[in-house]
Amino acid sequence: MGALSNLRVLDLTQVLAGPYCTMLLADMGADVVKIERPGGDLIRSNPPFVDDAETEAYGGYFQSVNRGKRSIELDFGDDEDRADFLSLVEEADVVVENYRSGTMAKYDLEYETLREHNPQLIYSSIRGFGDPRTGETHRQGQPSFDLIAQALGGVMEITGSADGPPTKVGPGVGDLFTATLNCIGILAAVNHREQTGEGQYVDTGMYDAMVSLTERAIYQQSYTGEAPTRRGNSHPTLFPYDAFETADGYAVIAAFGTNHWREVCAAMGREDLAEEYPDRASRLEHRDYLREQIADWTLERTTDDLVDALEGRVPVAPVQNTEDIFADPHVHARDMLVPVEQPGTDAEVEIAGSPIKMTETPPEPRGRAPLLDEHREEVLGEEAETPADD
Image 1 (spheres, rainbow, N blue to C red):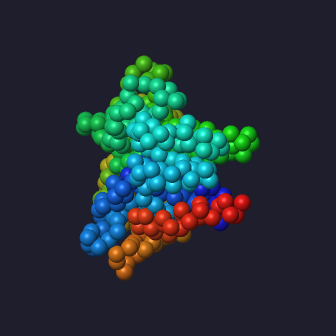
Image 2: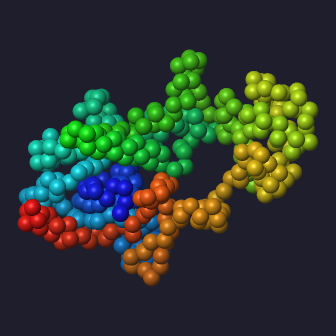
Image 3: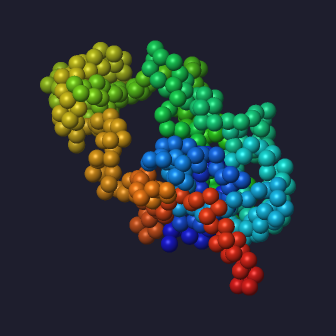
């Protein structure tokens, strides 16, 4: 029994942002019914596969963000399927969709219609540019993906080497951060409904979310009147706070506090630097020279040696790849790699666990992702039984 085991969520989303949001809810115990359009979520066929794409029900992309959900396939253009959906809405707590603005209205299934069937419904949307209900703009109705959101929201402009091009952040933060904010909004709406009995519309736009994510660049623009740009792995106002090459890789050091700075200087055998540059202002002013001193020192050591020299006294870490992560006992102790069945094979695969830890109702992936329409009879049968139960 998870913390949200009392919630029924109708998940109309596909690809990444929406499914990640509802995955978070499912991990916390919500009954998430994934309502898929004919043919299913566009991302079901996306690789990687364990062995054979022809025999496996879906790839790793779909498995990762749809674990623990139930699936039914509905065509909103079909009168019977539309009626089935409305019957589910009457008993649902939350509906989540990530279509373009206006798509649900084509089927007369927009928020206003669904609210007539369930006044306490929480209706949540994730769109590239938000919904007109919460602030109308000329961009609404345009398609958007992570890359578009990162470009518009300033993420790419402040990511990458100073002498290189604007660079997309590796993970799809335009999707994932937006999804996380949307999940928070849904839970806030649930709490409001508990107090008032009122449902409401929750709207999170990817562009908006990226502006929120780049909060540092926003206040820098306001305070200085200058647009921040790329600084590689360094920080505009903290030093040292950077990645340094070692003899066999890279490590990061975050020693901008004076106590940590002194520890770095002691490990280097350069107490003179601690004396000559005793405060943050002096270190920032001479950051180029000081970075060279640190870089010369780190390059003479392996990553393990460097970490051993500083760990416990200074914030330091190796730059890890996924092989390193899979080998890290910390990751296993925190249950951050979870095995699930891969349909169409005899194998299990591992997906990322839940980073939300709770002592009484610990969130966790609750089984593999569903087969397309796997739970039709189960879900619609439950609705057919509801009047008799009443």
